[in-house]
Length: 126
Image 1 (tube, rainbow, N blue to C red):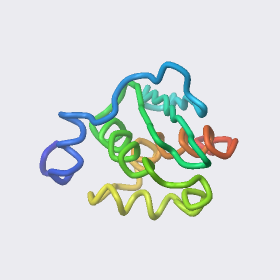
Image 2: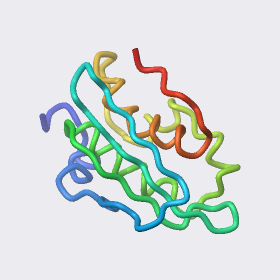
Image 3: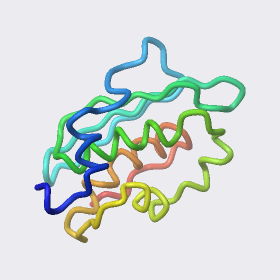
Image 4: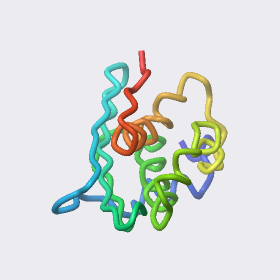
């Protein structure tokens, strides 16, 4: 596993940031990948259109859970307007790890949960 992902991603997997649930989130969505069993919930609190707190909860591989932790740090303090521009390629670049095509769904599951919670977008995992 360690030869595949960078230390940043592995550190977020081993010592996840912002793991847990928010008492009364303004945004929340869960996504599930039936192909591998990964499941991630993204929750956030908003103030004046900005994410002031973000959390995740889930079960899954190092890639999925490390990506979820990185995502929560990435979105905090930013406006939904600015985050609308956070596309999948920009998010994948934030992971700073090479992601094989077969593992893209694992890496993007937290991003999909965020997009669903924030903008009502339906996941496209097939």
